[in-house]
Length: 294
Image (cartoon, helix red, strand yellow):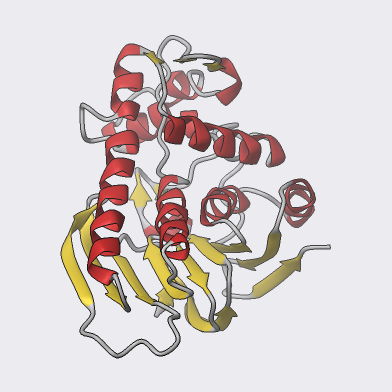
């Protein structure tokens, strides 16, 4: 299994239930978060939990999709104001924490800049619209004029956490959940690390934690990669950044930001954010560098 930023959702879980007899797994295949999806669960009660897991994923789509005009995010971008659901408010708090820890390198208000580059628009005018701090979060969320948000750098990790937490609450003690990012219950699980330029670089072991990986060149946008510096300071410094943490949402957002940060800046972010375990960086020549917490 290559640890790339692919958008294929695959959940494989096994319930820890002493003495339980083997049973056929419960399976579902479909579309989730805009990608082909598959969920496979093993153990007692798998069919009921599978139904719950699908419902949770659909709920996340209804909140954070850029392409569903009825989603909370689409309605916020269209009107500039939203009374957020609890899940939307939680994701805002998580995004805000990583934004602050990274000095603004992670900034969901980058959406106008993304659109300008994708459509050949006025890039500098779009960059002037970015700025997480220009948004107001109180009872309602209010965007500054011209602003729009994207949660593509954190929503897949958030979905991974939601489904993993559901499985844990229903007694599934060993699981590997992949909704663009990985989170494990139990383990150990072996995951491969790949870089768009250098290819396969090796494997790592994951147990009771999450791994999220970002590679700017995994998707082209205009003449460059898809990870943009909202501050306008620099092009990506790393070909790939992979973050290990307890939370997949936090790992997802930080891996995005790490592509734009030097090692000292990454260490400062790791010191601020809780439960970050390790950051693995791949430079343009395919050389690995690892930063650990503590």
